[in-house]
Image 1: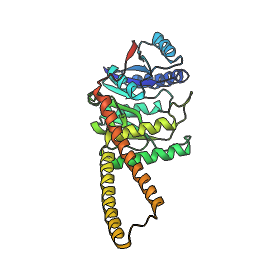
Image 2: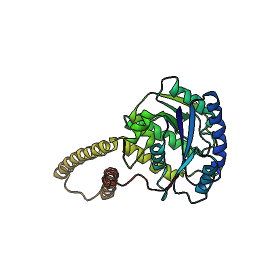
Image 3: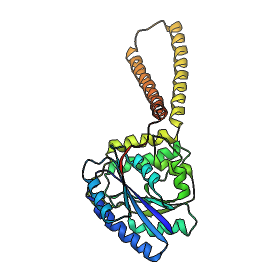
Length: 312
């Protein structure tokens, strides 16, 4: 028998979970009908939801023995939920899906065939459109993918979703990375493995509201850049070197001007502007260094990625 584990991170998704369960069960039942050796399990990860998400999942567990769940002691974030799901999956193959049905279950049979019959270790998905998203959010998302692929040696595909199916070998490789500051899209690329990509157009949520505000996405993008590139540190160092050279040239210029023309007092407003500008650059560079130090500090604490209060 071959077991397919379906990992579902949930945060305040009480409205969406029933729709998700019904749609996924239709697809998995048809898959099992065509493959008698296939078994499936659903592993819901309740990421400290403040609504009745856990109660809904418990109800599904009571009527369906293939449903399992892990409930966090508080909200640890989607990255921790994904890690917990992978850690609790028992399948030969594992797929990660969002509960809001923006990850179309209809693609699952074809993705499953890619890893079982076509020799791929992973089958991943990406959105080719961002229809329905705010224009500003879509614009900055595209800029982020361009920026991080220039800064990092790890390829991160534009529009990539967390929706992907992986072999047990790839899952184990991801679980071997114990870092607390996780950026899963980068981790997928870093561990490698042969991946087939499936494209689809953006799909609206079936229910509920997105938990990703512009500010949260901005912070998440910074996490990704810091986690998979040291280029900002090199940039800060080069910026410091550049302004040191400029300052050296200006000192020589001022000395020569003073010797030739005396010591005029005019020009102090421009000097103040220069001081403020250079001070801003220094603070920016210190902020870049501080961001890396903060991540290193959090890693040295060796705190658990998540804490589970209930599992079944």
